Structure formats: structure tokens, C-alpha cells
Image (cartoon, rainbow, N blue to C red; front, side, top):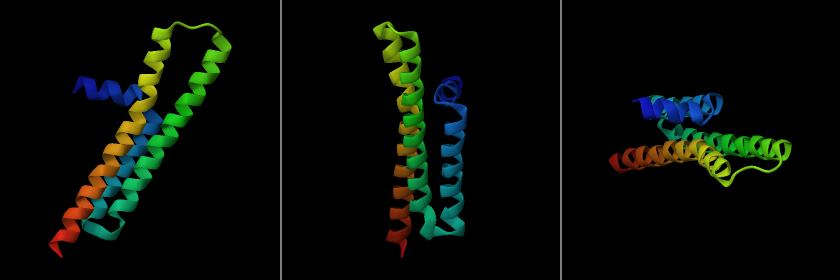
Length: 106
């Protein structure tokens, strides 16, 4: 569990919280509003991408201010940037799976 919490913090608590709220909306809409499951998943994906873009902008600003940086630092920052996107993709894929299961039951 320590690893998941570390990823949550590394991916930016603010953006990861927003994507988690989209995940909660997917799970709640599964029972309350089945037609909205996929849309909430898409919101999670969009928020994950926005979080990654915000992280890229921050990284570029830091690189410009710092000047010359080591390649390992750049690679570590690149890894962090993709955490929110990965989480958003997982939320979206889960919403598609739930949507497929709900439509196959009808």
C-alpha cells in the first residue's frame, strides 16, 4: 500500500484527487445513473491528461530556470508526468468495462 500512496503523492495530490473523484463518480453512477458511467470515465481521462500537461509545463519551467540538468533528473521527472495519465486511462478503461457489462445484461 505504501507504493500506491507514493504514486498518488508523486502524481500531484491535486490532480490525482480529481481523477479519484471521477473514479468515485463512475462507481456511483454504475447504480444511480448507468448512462453516465462512460462520461465520468472520460472526465477522469481528461483530468489525467490535463494533470500531465500541467506537470510538463512545470518541468519545462524548472528546466528553463535551472539551465543544464542531468539526464537522470529529466527521466525521473518524465516518469512522474505520466502517473496522472496512467491513472486517468485506468479510470476510463474501467468505465468502458462497466458500460460493456451493463449493456450486455439488457
